[in-house]
Image (tube, rainbow, N blue to C red; front, top):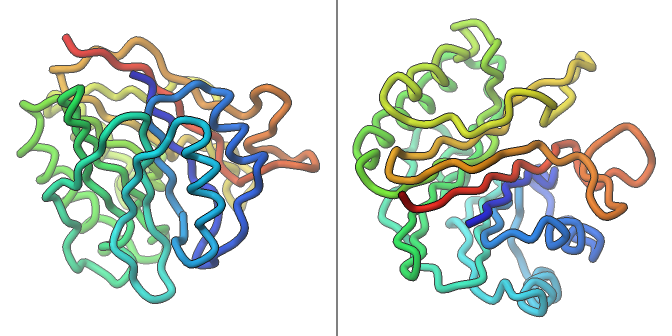
Length: 239
C-alpha cells in the first residue's frame, strides 16, 4: 500500500484545487491520499468528482471548525470513520486530526497536522503529548500516523524535537525519509516536518519527500510550485 500525505497550503481559505494538483498526486500512484491544511466547502464538488475519476471514490473529511483547516483522506477502497478524536487543546486542534479505517486491508490511519505553535510551546507540547498517549493505545494494531507535525527531528526540546524520538522509543517505526526536505521555513531553511510513524505490525518498504513528479512541481522556489510542502510518500505492507 502506498500512502501519500501532502499539506496543500490552504491555511483557512477554501482555495480552488487545480487539476494539476490532482494529476501530481495521481502521478505517484498512491492507494491512499492524506491532505492536510485542506478546507472543505461547497466548491469541492468538482475536486471530489475528479478524484473519483482517478479511482479515489471513497473519502472522509474531519469535522469542520469556523476559520480552521481540516484533514481529508481519500482512498481507492472503502473507508470507515475511526473513533479517535483530537481533544480541545486549542481551537485549531480538533479539525486537524482524522482517524479512518480501511476495512479491506485492515489498516488504520490517523492523518493529522499539528498547528504551528512555534510561539506557544506549551500548546505544542500538549498536542504532542496527546499524540504520544494515543499512539501507545494503538501500537499493537496495523496503524499509520502521518501528516504535518510541524517538528523537525533536529529541533530543540522546547520546540518538541525530542517527541519524534519518544515515539520511536515506544516501538514506532519512523518512516520519514532521512534526506531531502518537506518545507522551507520562514528563515529560508529546508526542514523535515512532515512525518509518518508506522506500527510494528506493518513493514516499511520505502519513503520519500517528493518535490517533483511527471512535470509537476509540488514545492519549490520556481514558478508553478503547487504548495509550500513536498509530498510525503510511504510504501507499507502487512507483515
